[in-house]
Image (tube, rainbow, N blue to C red; front, side, top):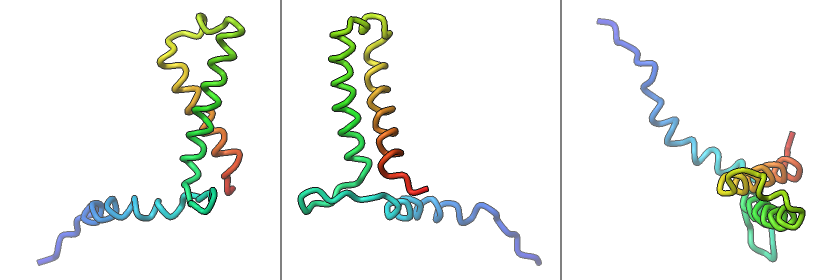
Length: 92
């Protein structure tokens, strides 16, 4: 009898090892002797800049025309965070 090969047999093991493999790919920033992941720094910068832009949009008077603010400002923070990550920590 020939043994039947299951092509997806190693998938659960591969999925279980994936987070451990990706954890070592994250750049680390040293701030005052403590190591922080770079994405955390980018998220903080994104939130601060989005809050500053909210003040600027309010002062200029365009905030009422932006649409649903609960959607606009989190998306703006994510956009800024991803842009900062790509500009500062791009290894390509």
